[in-house]
Length: 276
Image: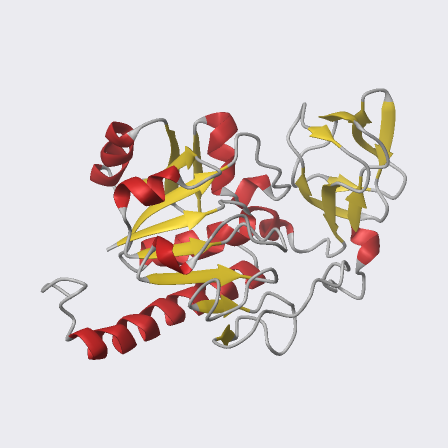
């Protein structure tokens, strides 16, 4: 059963990883220049480096249908540059997941597949997709929504050890970013993390550099470029899927199985093949 996932950033990777481990065939679609900062746990990084391994699962950048098939034969996850979803029309998957987490809809609709699921605000369940998954941290994180949209974006990062907005660093100007620190480094407040052209970017707190945007990425003002974890004893977190991403992955898996059960009851499972 083919699942096409739009987006392969760190939260989308939590979804892709969970579905892959659950036995689904996956194709991930990305933009030409992904902007994930938690790059060590984002399959989107293979767009730059050709391949990426996250917790034992390998993804590879692909350029055509032949390379997609080769990845599937090797039990790898193909990631294609396809911002408009042309492969959705070509391959006609049973399931489409929008995990771009852009806070708005870039064209995902219920006609794309028998089962459609979207993560976060920007979608209305029952109109745009079958199910919307709540992405706001808190009691309802991962809740499946069938009749409305997710909670609106607050613009404030989640709380880690009592720190919220101070731990995330945003660009103050337009320019090309160049890092001098790498993911996993311990950094101190006011230490230089990198440069936007000739302008230094400083750490806002002491902690572990959990994420930083790719070198030579052209940023604009208020663009997220780095993430610092204040918990110094949590080094492994820099290289593992986050609790939020795992929760979203579990929610999507639940959503798929519940829709398969519902649609299967309606259609006698015939639509999804005799093997289901």
